[in-house]
Length: 62
Image 1 (cartoon, rainbow, N blue to C red):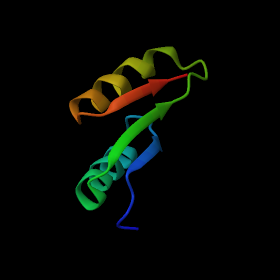
Image 2: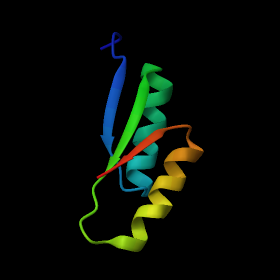
Image 3: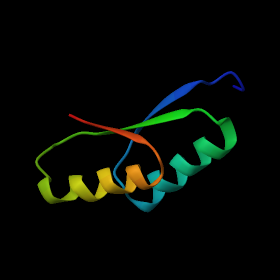
Image 4: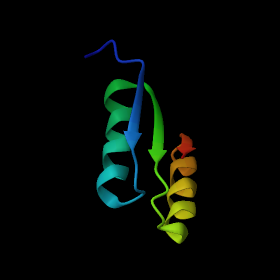
């Protein structure tokens, strides 16, 4: 899988997905886009967006 160029990660902003995000960046040196779905959790979305930005990631919110 060394030819991976871009990965979309379903991202909650929690510990597990944050570790995976960093691992993807370090291991594959590919572009990572985080996807966070708005399922009515409201106040949890902004912290996830901010955390993705801290990793230098382009967050997508639907």
